[in-house]
Amino acid sequence: VIRLSAATQDYHGSIVCNVHGINPKFLEIGKKKREQQENGDKAFTKGAYFIGKMIWSKGYKELLELLKDHQKELAALEFDLFGSGEDSEDVQKAAKKLEMTVRVHPARDHADDLFHDFKLFLNPSTTDVVCTTTAEALAMGKIVVCANHCSNEFFKQFPNCWTYDNHKEFVELTLKAFSEEPAQPTDAQRHELSWEAATERFLKAVDLDKPFERKVLSRTTSNYMSTSINFQQSVEDASAFVHHVASGFEVSRRIFGAIPDSLQPDEQLRKELGFSNPAN
Image 1: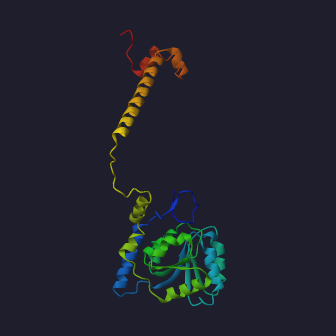
Image 2: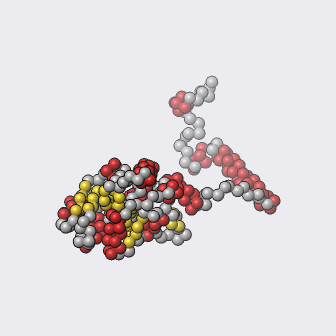
Image 3: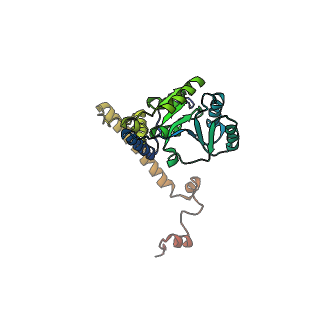
């Protein structure tokens, strides 16, 4: 059993390995952003956002509580939330009560041009196994501030993934992200988010990444296998002979489930099956 993260149920003998990748289009977006940074252009012109199905259990509850508890420290910042779901109305009401700018929008495709210029992806959720939107945000070259949780363990290898353990660290990292530019991920780091890398991890996890080795059998083993194969063939031949003999008698055919009186089909059935008439 391969578990995507330690957030899943544990099984005896299971291993934890993220064998999940992302759509290549997010990597292409990140590549363009890196080129902008290398050319000295401002690659990210927007602030922070969160995207996900708009239900409280998907991180909205944690995020809005963090913003509410620290709205004075974060008052100068702006946040955008994108999603649709059964709690959309309640999320909008909670956002309006905050003394800071928090805009709530309908769901959009994460690869939409609208998201390309956002610099910071906030994800306080601890209910995901491995959050795909976090992987997509990292692939696009953004800074990600997320909880120090086992579901985010895979993402800690990326320099743009900043994890927090408490409210104070969340505020510090969020303010820091607004004042700094994201690091430029290397090709190797970007590759780790791809389906190719996920497949490589899967093959390695199940020991299929090694070349096939043909094992030479000993004479004893070969003789044993030869004897076993011959014995099995004899059993199969005997079984076929018994079946052949039994199928020639109406009584034994009935015992094995054959249709009554089907040993010798009548004239009508022979016509339907395309058999020639016995008289001919």
